Image (tube, rainbow, N blue to C red; front, side):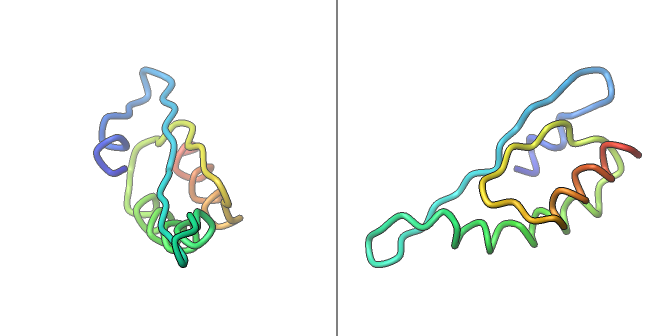
Length: 74
């Protein structure tokens, strides 16, 4: 994810997605992974100083959405 974010700039429109999966008793558990990934992504975005573009996520939170909006408005 970080390497894709590093390739963004203000000259183009970038679309990326955040995706991960884990298993819970052999059953894919994307919501569980989102619970782990969302705080990490929020902290990564807070440290950046350039736009991230459009990030597509499953199970996003308001803090992740706010971080994406804030970084794109800088």
